Length: 238
Image (cartoon, rainbow, N blue to C red):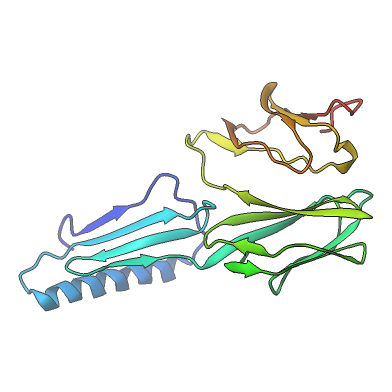
C-alpha cells in the first residue's frame, strides 16, 4: 500500500480482546484487498483510501465499528450480543441457580459467589432464578447490544431479591488508574449504608442496601488496603 493509503482510528479506551491473531490478520487483509479492488475497479487512476474505525460499546468491552470505503457507503459493524454475569449473595450460604435466556449462568452454587461474564444474544431475555430449590419471581432482562449486566441475587432464603445492574467496564481515563465501585448486597446490614475506603481514601459513603455507588478511579497498585465499614457492624465488614 502507498503511504497514507490506510488510516486507523483506534481510541485509547478501546478494550483488549482475545482473538486468533492469524484469523484477524486475514480479516484485515481481505478488508483492504476488497476495498482497494472496489476503488480501482471504478477508477484505475484512483488512490484508494480505507478508513477503519472501532469504538467500545456501552459496557466498554464489546466493540462496534464503522467501515468506509472510498467512493462507497458507510457500513456499521456492531455487536448483537450482551454480556451478563450473576452474583449470588443470599444469606446463610443459600444455593443459587440462575438462567438467562437459554444459558445457565450459575448452577447450584453457594452464596457468596461472583460468576463470570457470558456472552448472550441481546434483547428481552427471560430470567429464571432458584434459591435453595425454590423459584424466585424475576423480570425479563432487557439486554441492550454491547452492554454489560450483573444480575444480583441477594436477600434471605425466605425473601430473596433479584436486581439488575448495568456495568461500565470501560478502561480508566488514566492508564495508571483502575476503576472501582461498591454494591451493598449484605442483607444482614440492610438497614444501614455501607462505606468504602481505598488506602484510607473514601471512595463511597452511605451506599444503601440494594444500590451501587458511582464508579471512582483510584491509582492502580500491586497492593492496596480496601476497607468496607457499616455502622451496625462491630468491626470492618471487609
